[in-house]
Image 1: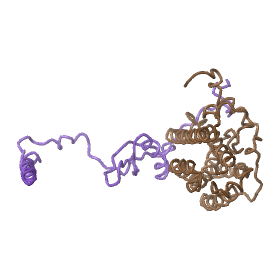
Image 2 (image 1 turned 45 degrees about the vertical axis):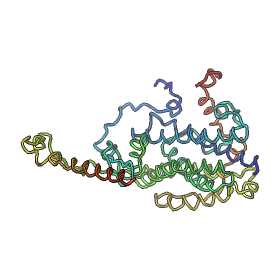
Image 3 (image 1 turned 90 degrees about the vertical axis):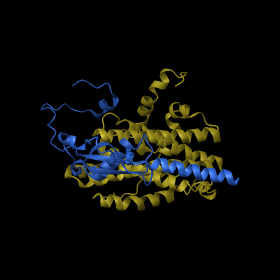
Image 4 (image 1 turned 180 degrees about the vertical axis):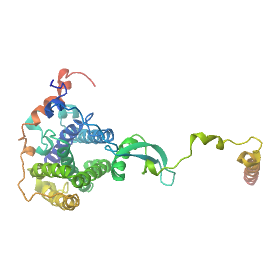
Length: 250
Length: 130
């Protein structure tokens, strides 16, 4: 197995899960209705759980620092999350559109990884896929609902979709080891994932009365550590408690 | 307006509405659905509680996290509360059974003794054979 390639893949998956999970958690207590608040918070906990499992596997198999250190103690440019996940949430329409784009990509990624030649990663993918299946259902239900409910809900969803789409394409920013991942059977590669993702979301967007922008420009950079201005404040906030006493055991 | 101490709220930069919060209309936050949880395939669905939602598909996604998160389950039903029909508590006296009717209760049959006696007999036969 190509170790560097596997490590690179898992690191960006873990960082996506952590940063996305943190953004979801920002709705805890201020969600639109109680039931949705609980559901969104629960999805957030699932994501942070996935990040933890990936960081743990990285520690065991590749000797990276432990999950807490990976999560809270790295420099901003060491995070490999896609830019889509960094943005502070403008409104619930944006939160739901990001959720829709992100979880469809996650579901296909983890589904494909079940067949990975990297056995430990394949096992992890099998374990968490059921949770992501619910996340996708949750996103689809909301998109369909708000895409077709009222003029205001439709226009706000469409505006969020237009804004988020180039960044969603950035999820599939190719890494330095695409060919190695494909050749060694670890992963099918970002290009293929992106094609499957587009096939999956296109009919759902149409059913929801929304339109996919025609642009194919992807906002990239996140995978190589070039982030938007929103990531640094997020990391600051997320690690505030840990930094107050780095030696404490939790 | 005072700045919120919660960074999430402060970022939203919400302006206070001088006219106050508009009143919430009836059913604006959806209607209630009763949730039934099935712990194992083939077992009955058991009532677990209520969620508020705007339609059945939303009720299902809410029910999953409200009632499926902390217990094992394989399936769920949601039913609009208005589709549930019930008796009146004022009439609960009709469920009371007159004591002098023991022949109608399952305890009135002494079949348990017969089953026990039969099992004993079979067990005895097995020990005799071996």
